[in-house]
Length: 110
Ligand SMILES: [Zn+2]
Image (cartoon, rainbow, N blue to C red; front, side, top):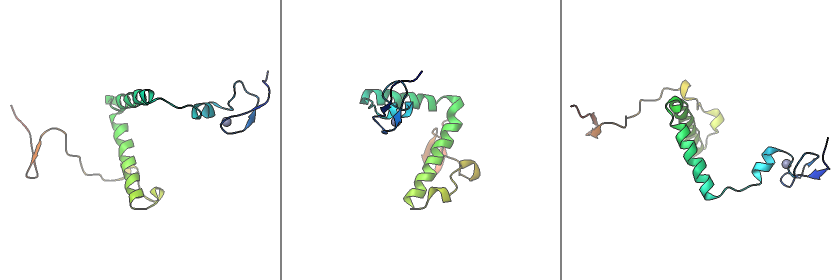
C-alpha cells in the first residue's frame, strides 16, 4: 500500500510515504526544541558522558575535538593533522586533587 504523492516540506523531494515528510531525518530537522528541552538534552548528555564506563571514550572524544579545534585555529585542515589521541603522546594531566604551589603538586596526608 502506498499513500498519495506529496512533496516533503523540508527538502522538496516527492514521495508516497505516510505523513508529510520524506524521512525521519527531514521530520526531525523541521522541528525546534524549546530551551527547556535543550537543557534536558544537555544534562542527559553530561550524565551519560560521565558514567565510569564512558570516561575513557569521553576523554578521547573531547581530546579529538580539542586537537581539531587547535588545527582550525592554526588555519590547518584538520584532516591533515593527527587528531587520534591514541596515535599521539599527550603529557599527563594535572590531577584534580592536590594543591599546586610554586610548580609543585602537594597532597594532604592523614
Ligand atoms: Zn525530505
